[in-house]
Image (cartoon, rainbow, N blue to C red; front, side, top):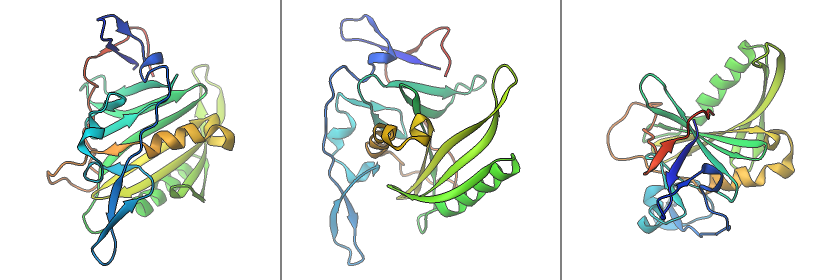
Length: 230
């Protein structure tokens, strides 16, 4: 489902310009603890909310979706996958031209990351579906390249390629799936990768079971655009 929010002049603003018409760059400064216990700047995101200046989370170019705070790019659409029965937001989809980035966040244990285990399970499921899964080293670490059969609305079967990226953070796992041209053509990938680096995960302090989805919500002032579906 695509959403829109009211502009400052009270006129509806479509998601095509949801992130503004002029590109802005915002430097983020996070920290991570070394083995000695001291902190040093984290080079690149995605970041945990505790690693950034709180003012960043409420900046005008940021979109607060609850567990995820994102920054888009000019021309990028924000789409939310919503459960029609419960109304819960299940995933975030950032769409730019013929590429997309799907984002989901999950709780993880304090002591260790879970991406390695989840990655094996995703690969096994792709194989079960008659597809293939191969590991490769990308800019965010070990990721998966999946090629799986997909049926289109006309009933035709075709192969869909995607990149599945996992980032283990403090008590969370952020899973990002790159779809479309950016999944197969390296020159189309940078906007999707930069959008992923700009993500801030808001884990919260409440106890949660490992792999439980972190709660997402509609952005403030967002309204469904009738007749549009993600």
